[in-house]
Length: 355
Image 1: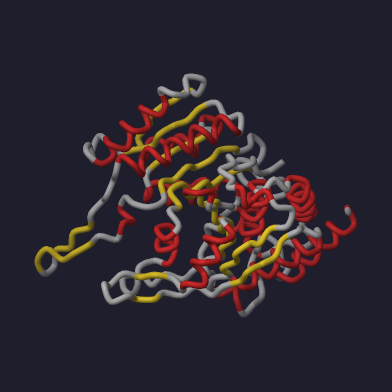
Image 2: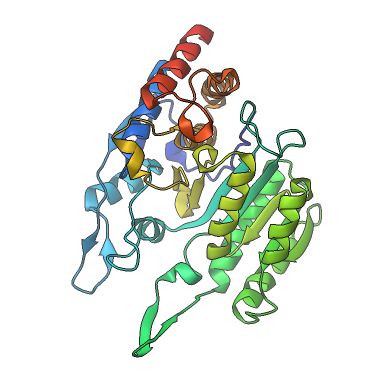
């Protein structure tokens, strides 16, 4: 099927037959596409109960940002969540809510698969794309440590720690083994950032020694951007620091047709996992009812496989792929004219017909 199962770091609470899922609908088209996921899950009779929470920034006296306590309590209780896109102010305002959520729940590894989608034509459709980005999720340039040195001069700190680097490297190698992947490439710029990226590579090398069955390589980030565009088949699993992963995963999303098709999962300690679409809030599409729910839906299917509900995930995925291949009810971002409700309704119809 389209999405490989994510390596399972399941807690005992995930072994229940019915699952409570925390849902953060988000901003812009977030509530619209989240509603699509709920409708499609209902059509497939997926045994979940949604606990929906609004997420917004709360500024504490110490200057730090947090999210509402009920949302925090829900994730810690359920251990699993689905998150829509959240708006982040540019050049001002509070710390990114995405970053706040990752820090709050210790979501150290961001898993972003990129695989050719049948029915979505790209220059790479014939050869196919099938790779996975493993992005360190908590530090790097996204640590949010900035200050003015003197007027007109701003310094931004890139924070790299051995613990965070080792965590994402260990997850990447475990994922590769669990998903029958054969090689891992660590992307870096250690030729320039010798201490920070050098530390990241040192931890990757230590972990690689424990997995002799996995071929391990290292590659400059800029070189990898060139090579993957020329021949995506060279790449399998790629592990990298935070900023690199954010940029590189958008590149790989472009190879398969765009961010509207790109799923993502954030894996944390103690079995916590939060799945999300990687695109933005697309505010211009909200009033038009044209938001494409595919990325959030595919992220939700990653979640179902994490919860060992493979049959339900396969049923929904089959309906999605059939709808995309027929091209009758697809949204504008992938070449169609359908609205969000039309696309959602067609997937639900196919699910009911196959059930």
